[in-house]
Amino acid sequence: MKIHRLLAGAAGVALAASSAFAQSKPTVAIMYFNDGAIGKAHDELAPLSKGICDVLITEMADNPGIVVIERDQLQSILAEQKLVTDKAVDLSTAIKVGKLLSVHHMIYGGFITDPSGTMVLDLRAVEVETGKVEFVTSATDKTANLLALIHKVAVKTNAGLKLPDIPKQLGEARAAKDEKIPFQSVMLYSRGLDAKDAGKKAEAIKLFNQALSAFPDYDAPKKELEKLK
Image (cartoon, rainbow, N blue to C red; front, side):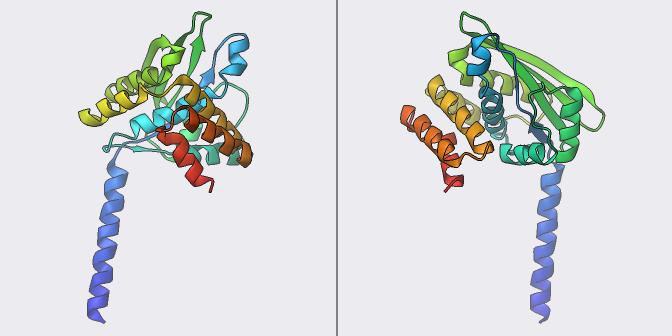
C-alpha cells in the first residue's frame, strides 16, 4: 500500500512540475484579422480573416519555448461571449479576449489589398496584464504569396516580443514548405474554417478536401478533416 502511495505521490509531483513548467512559458493568443480589402476583394478575401489567424498560430507554435492558444479554443471563447461580430477587432476587444484566455500576449491586426494584387499585413501585440501595446509591425508582398507574408510577420513578431528563438531548422523547413502551397488552397482552407464555425460540417469537409486536391501535402486541411470525422 505504501508503494502505491509513494508512486501516486511521485506522479502528482511530476504532474505539478510539468504544469508549472508549462505555465512558466510565455502564452500567446491571436485574434482574427480585420479585412481591410476594398471593393469586390473585401468579400472575396473575407475568409482570410480566420485563415491568416490560423496560419500565424501554426507558424508561432513552431516555437517550443512558448504556448500558443489553438484557434478552436479562441473560436469557442468568441462564440460563448458573443464576440463574433462584423466589427473590426480593436485594442479593447483584444485585451478582453486575452484576459478570458489568460494569456500574456494578445496579437491582432488586419490586411489591406490593392488592385495590383499587393497585400499589406499589419500586426499589433498587446501585453494583456497592462493593456500596453508592446510591438507593432507590418509586411508587404503579393497576395498570392500570402504564406510567405505571414511567415515574415511571425518571425518579426517573435523577435519583437523578445520570445525564445524559433529553432532555425524548423523555421527554414516551414518557409520552404509554405512556399509550395498555392494561394488557391489557402483560400479554400480559409472558407472551410468559416463553414466549420458556422456548423456547416458537410460544406467544411468539401472545402477542406478541395484544398487538398489543389495541394495534397497541405497539413492544415488534413488536421481539420481528422477533427470532423
